Amino acid sequence: MRTVRKTSVFPAERDVVFTELQKLSTLQYIAAPFASFVPVDASHSQTWTVGSTSAYRFRLFGLIPFGTHTIRIERFDRDGVSSREGNEHVPVWNHRIYLKDRGSETEYTDEVDICAGWKTAFVWLWAKAFYAHRQKKWIRLLRDKGNEYHRH
Image (cartoon, rainbow, N blue to C red; front, side, top):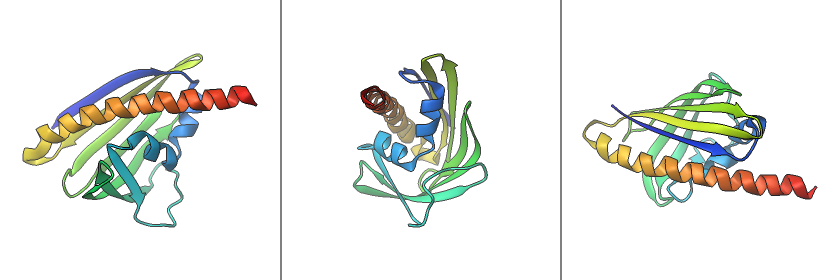
């Protein structure tokens, strides 16, 4: 098992980050182009709640099929998220997100435990790049949202 941990300070209040965190569209935006997540069930509510399990067709770089990725939510609140995730190639992808209120900003941490047998080191390297990318996209998303809020 290997762990990836990445922390950034986001330019938005924790409630704004938490609201965006609840949307599948946010995951799809921040994951691209490293990964794509398309719900297996078209009737998926596109929001997560404690105890829910959802499945996605997962593609590396939006092109390479990488199985069905399942997300089971164990915790989902203003302080963060905990999920047990995985697919046939990476059976253990346990993801925790920590949200720390810093007034007009939010300290955001992704922490992921990965276990994929002999592929673990390769998946871990990809995940390090993926979470750095995700957090940069988060910051861009929140800056754009902030600009929208100020225009109204």
